[in-house]
Length: 484
Ligand code: ADP
Image 1 (spheres, rainbow, N blue to C red):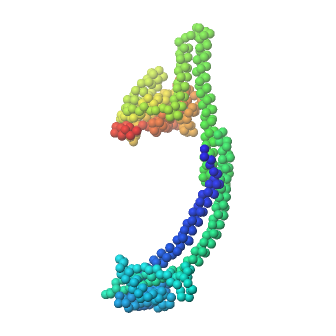
Image 2: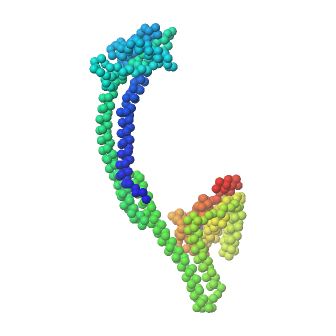
Image 3: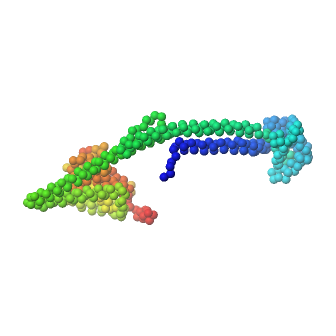
């Protein structure tokens, strides 16, 4: 397995990459791209000045307008009419490169502007001041000259705007030395941030990890929640909940073992006891005593089958065999089994069926659920011996309910009765097939059907156990089937 590096090294790595990236971006923008970007923005501002002059051509006091423009934009402006006469020019011509240009050069700019599509020409001239001994990159002045031919009333005019580009060498060297400081600051920042983040993020995690060492035994000591962050608190709560669940699961496992052994021992003792009695006392070899052995072994068989069923369901090893069937016919057929309770024990079964509908479900498994509800209603229905079976059409669903008028279920037990081997009262009267896991099996089967189910119950008033199946619509289900 690949060895994972610690969070500390990961933080160092990521923050260093971030710092290097930041330095590279600063270097590219502040040093490499500084001059081209500056030149580009200078050209844009020169063009903007030309545009303003163009718009101001008709102004009455044009000379004053030009002079103001020039001062504000630090440029030098000349406007010629096509006849060659100057109609406006800089008031202060000192240093203006346009006056040192030969008329040949100017006319070459105008010609080039005339030839271009947008009637403009951009020239970049390098000039060496006379006082310098010789040209070098640092004493050459770069100037941008923008020439544009525009149409005025009747004749054409030529607008020339020149702006010098200040050499940036000094700025670049200042920025380069600043970059060293930024680099030192970033290195220190990376170290400081790593240590700080490590403390803030990792320390609570280490504490939680230490506390979670006994988690497999269901023990977890909540961590000190001061000086930490919400995700760590959440993790802490999740682990505390997990420990609680492990404890509960462990208890449930122990309960299950003790309950199963108890329920296995009772019939086994009966079978053994009755068998030995019949061997020792041949006159006790009666049909009734043999029936006890048969009943108890059946009960044993049911318990083992239920346990196997539940474990197969929980391991997803049970596949539903769905078919389309009429729900009313299904209920009527199931109710035949309870005729014996009506005749022998005086039970009253009221069956209320809505208009018949088809459902698409595993008939055998749905019968298992229904019969579990029925047997429980008989077992826990008390002396009322009155059970109402309903089949209602609600919002394109069939709701099947089994209501009894027995002792009901306490509110605190409602959620847990669906849990494996949960019994409200261990000494309860048990049906011959009652294994204490019937409702847990029902829950798994109904969940497998994606069916809604539940129980409405009130202590001493009785309970209604119910589940819902969607009404079967031919086209819909066929489509779903062909997709699957
Ligand atoms: P069993 O009936 O074999 O004990 P179940 O899983 O079917 O097992 O039921 C679990 C528990 O739920 C029962 O032991 C009983 O306490 C409670 N219970 C189930 N049905 C009813 C009911 N109709 N009325 C009251 N309590 C019920």
